[in-house]
Image 1 (cartoon, rainbow, N blue to C red):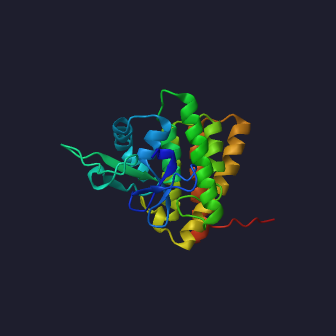
Image 2: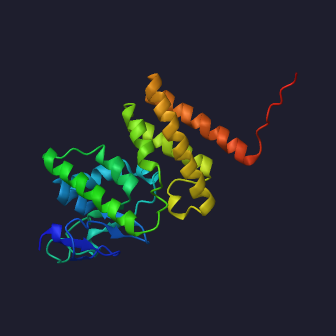
Image 3: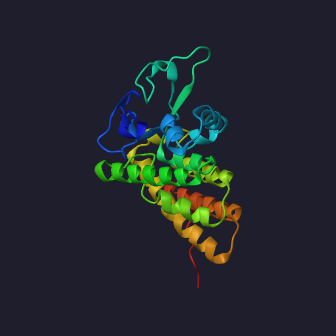
Length: 239
């Protein structure tokens, strides 16, 4: 059975899929994509992809938890047989949408058309999942608009990381804690991303660098946080 006709359960087990576009799994009630699916769909060796994920794991964890599983414990996606191998077991990672978005900015497949088709398929998959499920903590309204604004400024990978750190700092979250954010923290993140959208559009209009734009956003976030905490002092004009 081909991988395109398979979907994964929360335990990583392969089952027939109702749709070829259903390439996500639920991990603790959150949509994720298995690194083996990324490997198969994008035409990249899983060992190489796993090494890339591992080398960027600290940054990926700033965008959420990064569950991993030993392939010796999982069946092969194509055959359904045990994936147990001799020597050190291969590791499979489960990525959320922001992590996948970050990863796709790094990896380069040999077949650009195949990679582009995979990007389209996975975008549709996440979009369809959001249409049928409540808003998830790792993905909030305004996330893509914010990142697209930063991308338009010519941002590099470290700019996205610094932006996520600033968001987490204001929301009172540590790396990998977005999945457990409470309602107040989610609200703060949503407001932050609205602030980012406006700031990045101004930065585009004014020809700012992505570094200066992220710094400006951080300043606005801190100003907002100061108002929320009541530490800001409102100036009073005098005649």
